[in-house]
Length: 424
Image (tube, rainbow, N blue to C red):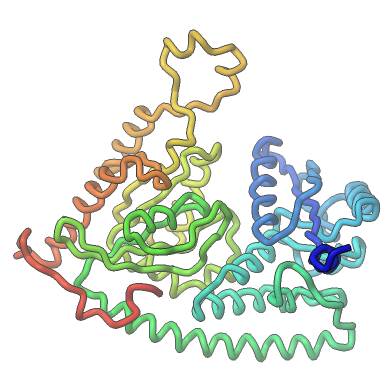
């Protein structure tokens, strides 16, 4: 065997094994199986983002979760047998588990147990880049894990990389661990307070300039649109929560200056601790003059995603702001066929095709708002000129309120803004 082949063999032998996961969800009284399948597809995408491969999905129809084990005893035995047979590494539940449920399930299943919130928290921790985002996520994670410590808990070492963990702590160490976590929570809160004070100072330096913030469900293309508008070198991946840091860029379009920001994507059942910890990042949304709500129109549940974002905005107190609806990824959506096109389609193609009537949708949202909706494809730049026109029209309206004597040929610069304001 050559030296190269021996090296390759050694690398393959020592390479970390991709962890496997099974997903579990309940079908509640008013839920359809199709809806739960869509939720599990999203959960699978989340697991993939963390680095785990989903090999099976379990569902059970129950009026409410079992107080002890979330699922019924028979379903739990089925899950346990599957784990043993296929040597599964982790089980991920689509809903949040109580501390007692987490402990019982870990004891019964003898593998790592995630619920939806913990999975999202770990993804955020993996994705956070700035000191502020890392501190916010660590704080949220420790607050979430504190009441859930069990003799098998290993979550606190996951930040070492991937989803691998070290061995469990022992029962005698639990109280010590709790004291350590409480101490870390206090330190993180203190650190975050200092960062937030700096953020308030930065935002005060932006007074007198129009602020536009993008919002939307995770993975709808906000970062791609940000790159398109600013030519900035930003991360844009086809993954949930590809970026969790708020980014602000200075723009001048048609001689009108404004700040354009990309914020963390929303998702259904976003952990409460995370929302609370990200209050300074989400201040970019609360303090914005205009919101750009980006929607992935190619997603089969895009209307549900719109509802989740609107609900979150209302909870944040930002539901009454002017909103530009941007329906992105229209190149991936199936446009409603004409009568002539239907003649050449089979009945199955017509029945199974998920077609979107763009004209009807545009008219519908035009009636809901006095701001024209935009249909585009940020990846290719299709229809970006219309987005720029609609955006500039709205920015001009607010800019003229701030500066009533604004002149079209006036020259602006951003010298009054603090250094570092272009990225938060």
